[in-house]
Length: 149
Image (cartoon, rainbow, N blue to C red; front, side):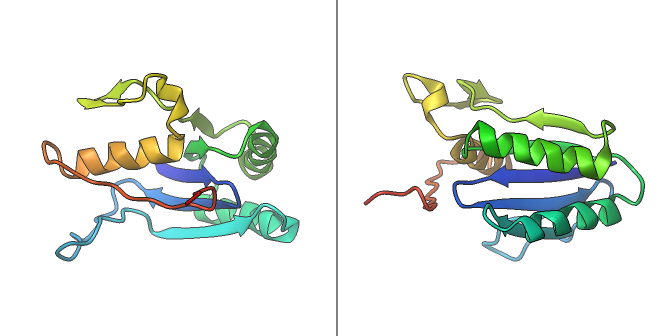
């Protein structure tokens, strides 16, 4: 099965395509593993780019329906647009999972008093880092376009 990972950020939609069962070479020392074979991005203001995404995703799917995991920090309007893109690409065949921030996942605890206040993009990064290096103390630093200094 194939998996399409989508991050709807504040300024861009980023995506990565993973084919399950494909052997991924181990990362170089100090590098993060990257199990995806294809990836890209499109700005929210560029409909031609989004139209091209549909064709790219359909080509990568090769007639199969992928599982789709989506993290969204950009709000319901863009979520609806992405939902429409996925329907255009795969009809109702794709399995959609809208990822949400949780209080805990697999031994990782979210320290926010109100767990949903932690952006889902930050939460997913933390879950991935925790899974990659379980039991280790980690400092994860990210800075998206919504960062205020």
